[in-house]
Length: 72
Ligand SMILES: [Zn+2]
Image 1 (tube, rainbow, N blue to C red):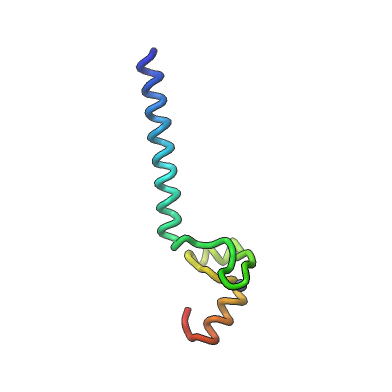
Image 2: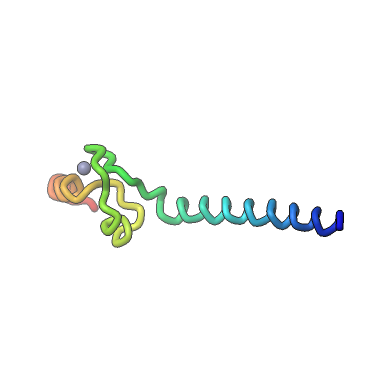
């Protein structure tokens, strides 16, 4: 019984570590995609973040930025 309990605890710890690692990977892959715009701090719509993983600006600021710098 004691062994089963230890195993369950080990699995639980492993699962938690994997979940954390997966979470960290998602953030790394998405370029730490932000929920808010770096320029105006407005919320970036979920749909926009899905289409543009890693986007850091809201639509207005991105348009403004691209228009003025020619960068994306
Ligand atoms: Zn903005």
